[in-house]
Amino acid sequence: MKPTYKTEPLRCWAKAKEIRQDYYKNYALAHEKGGLRWAGGAWSFDAIPAGLGDDVYPLTGEPYAAAIAWDKEFALQCHEAVEKAGYARDLCSYMRNYWGSIILNKYVFGGEFPKPDFIWQDHICCSHAKWYQVVRDLEGKDIPMYCLDVSVGPYEELTDNRLEYVVGQMHDGIAWLEKVTGRRFDDEKLIRAVSNHCRSTALWAEVCALNKAIPAPLDEKTMYSLYVLGTLQKSSGIVADFTEELRDEVKDRVARGIAAVPNERCRVMSDTQPPWAFLKIFRYLEQYGCVSVGSLYTFGLIGQWEVKADGTWGARTTPEQQGIVIRDRDQALRILADWELKKPEWQHFYSPQAKSEMMIRIAKEWTLDGVLLHYNRGCEGLSLGIAENRLAMIKAGYPVIVFEGNMGDEREFDEIQTLKRIDAFMESLGFEKDSR
Image 1 (cartoon, rainbow, N blue to C red):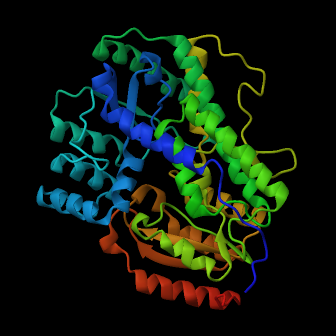
Image 2 (cartoon, helix red, strand yellow):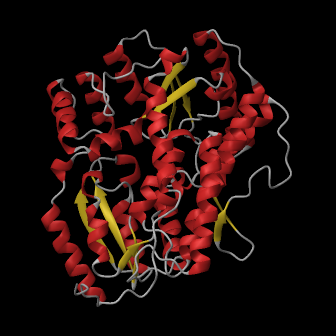
C-alpha cells in the first residue's frame, strides 16, 4: 500500500543518544574528575543535589534497570543472581535488575559497577526506599542514605500543611547533604536547577501534546528514547535545552505534515512501562497502519500538565512563564515540591479512578481508536488498579486489548501469544495488514 503521509527521521536523534551516553559515562568517571556520585530514583528531586556543584553526577535506578532489560542476556544473569541471593521473583523487576548488576559487579555500559557516594531518594512507590536499603546492604552500609516521604495524597487535596511536610524534609535533606559530603550548598545552583526542572518537564508535555495532530509526528517507541532524558536528570540545563530543541522540531513536523508512521490510519495508546526486551511489538502494529501516540506513562512520568482555558490538557505553565523570579532557597523548594506533587503518574497511586479519568481524556483529545493495556507483573505501583482502568475505558466506549508481561524480566512475556492478540484486536477494529 502506498504511504499516505511523508516521513523523515528526527534531526535531533543523534544528540539525544549523545546526551544519554555522556550521562552514564560521566557517572562512571566522576571520581576520576574529582566529582561525586549519587544514586536514587527517576522521581528523586535531582535539583537539590545540584546545589552541591556541577561535578555531582546521578544514576537514576529505573532507566538504568530498563537499559539492562533491553539486554536480555545480561538481564537474565541479573535475575538469576538476585534469585540465588534469596530475593523473591515477584518483586519489582527494575529493582531486581539493579541489584543483580551490583551483585555481579558489572555496569551495563562496561566495567565494574560504580559505587555511589550517597543515596538520595524519595518514596511514593512501595519499593522506593526498600530498593536502596538493599543497595546499602549489597554495597556496604557505609553509603549514607536520605529518603523523602512524598506520599501526602492527591494534588487536588494538597494543603499548606502537607506541602510544608515535604518542604521541611527538603530543608533537612540539604543540611544532611552538606554534612555527608563536606561541601557547602549553593542556593544559586539550586535555583537554576529548579528552573531547568520546571522547564524540561513542561516542554516534554508540549512535545506530547503535539501528538494530538493527525498524522502523529512521533510514535511511542521513539518517544521512549526521548522522554528518558528527563528520567535521568530533569534539572540539567542540557536536558532542558534539548527538550526545547525537540519541541521546536516536532512543531515543524506538525506544520509540514510529517508522520511517524507514513501509513497511519489507526491510533492507539499503551499503558505503563513496556516489555523493554520486546519493543518490536510497536513496529508490528505499524503493519496495520497503527501508531501508538503515547500513554499516560509516556506523557506523565516526567511531563507536567494542566487543564487549559479551552478545557483541554496542555503543558503546565512554568514559574518563569508566570513572571515569578525565584529569589531564595525556601521559595525554590516550595516551587519544586508543588510542581512535583502534581505529577500525573503520582495521582493514581491513591485512586484508580484518577488514572481512568486521565486515560479517557487522552483517548478523547488524541483521537484514539483503541487502547493497549500491559498487565505488567514487574511494577506493582503503575499496574495498581489496571483492571479497573480497563473497565472504565470500555464503559467510555474505547476498545481495549490486554496482554501480560513484565517490563524488566523477559521470561514473563509470551511474544507469540501477544502478536496473536494484536492480530485479533486489529481485525476487530476492522484493520488489515498492509501488503508489502
